[in-house]
Image (tube, rainbow, N blue to C red):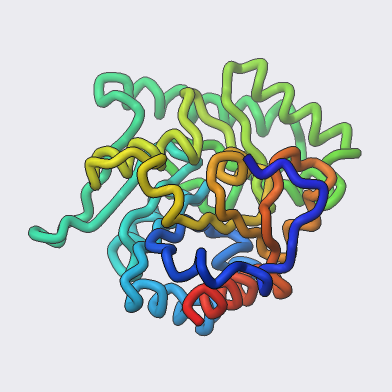
Length: 271
């Protein structure tokens, strides 16, 4: 949907649309967080959206350990994690965290063993490469620190980055790039497909049914399927780092970057 030559400033977001937004889907890294930190004003923005009756759904490449904490402690409706490998939510009756995994239970043990073998082969093949420091809390996803390969802003011109991605693809993995990580997994899910399943299974609706009442905010290449699908799409200003590589761009862009951009988005939406 959002194939644009230029995004508009979010300050121009139409009031007649903002009044009807009931769902906010958001990336996490460098969209809600700021260089790995959660700013007080950003967390307050999440709280304010929820207090206003808007369901906040975090859709991230982040690991299972983070997602459990977010689903348990943040005022959010659900969390889609590890680029769509699963979603988590807090059951309203039992208050327990429930997880829907998109790897079949019968395949789970073999999948995790295969992932462990992949980690070793990647580290041997590409000396100096670093896995994400949160890799220990990931279930189905391999995450590689982009800055251990090249400057994240230069990935389009980095031969070593291309070599790593091509190697992962040759192993049959689906590869996505965030602002900080190369994320790779076996399986045909992504942020959008798992968000669809989550809405269907938790709300008994199709994502198309609520698209007019929804907004998505993100910052990087792995958000592109979401930018393509949703009508009301927003980028925090640091998305400019990936502008030349994006085919599907957000319709609006905040003035501020990262978590401050998310807070700006929430404040304008609620005003």
